Image 1 (cartoon, rainbow, N blue to C red):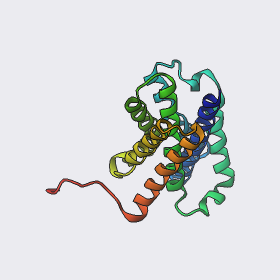
Image 2 (tube, rainbow, N blue to C red):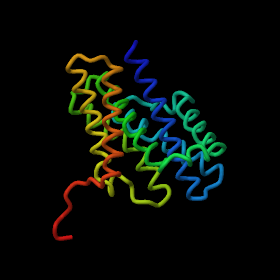
Image 3 (spheres, rainbow, N blue to C red):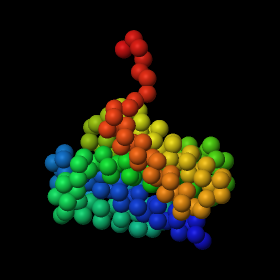
Amino acid sequence: MAAVTLFGALDALGTFVFGLSGAVVAIRKRLDLFGILVLAMATGVAGGMIRDLLLGDTPPAVFRTALPLGIACAAGLFTFFFGAVLDRMQRPVMFLDALGLGVFAIAGCEKALSQGLTPPGAILLGVITAIGGGMLRDMMVSEVPRVLREEVYALAALAGAAAYVGCLALGLSDTLAAVIGVTLAVILRLASVRFGWHLPRAPWF
C-alpha cells in the first residue's frame, strides 16, 4: 500500500511539474490558451503513457482516468494566470524540467520494479519515462529535444533511477530512496547547466 501511494504521489507531481514546464514554453512561444493547455497536457502525460505501454499496462492510465490530464491541465491554467510567479524564478523552465526529470525517473523505475522488471530494466524504463515528456514538448515547438543537445539530461535521470534502486538494495525505505534519487537527478541536471558539464564530443567535428 505504501509503495502504491508513493508511486501515485510521484506520478502526480511529475505530471504537474512537467505540465508547468510545457506551459511556460508555450507562453514563451506566444501560443494562445488552447495551445498552452495542449502543450502542458502533452508534456505532462507523454512519459507516463510511454511507460505504461512498454510495461503492457494498457490502456495507459491517462485513458483510464481523467486525473493525469486534469493535473496537467491545472498546471497549464496555473501558468496562464500566475505565470508571473514562475517568471520570477531564475530560468524557471530549466528548474521545472530538472524536477520533472528526477520525479518521473523515480516514478517510472518504481512502477517497473513493482511489475517484476530486473533493476537494469527498471532503471532504463525510468530514464525513458523521464525524457518522454520533454522530448515531445520540444518537438511540438520545433526545437531539437534537450536530450539530444544537452548531454547531462538522460544521464541525470539515469543517475537518479540508479540511486533509487541502490538505496532500496541497501534497505532504505521507499520514501527516503525516492527523495535521494530525485535530489541527485535534479542536482546533476542543474549543476551541468551551471558549470557547463558535458560528455566528450567527436574530436574531428
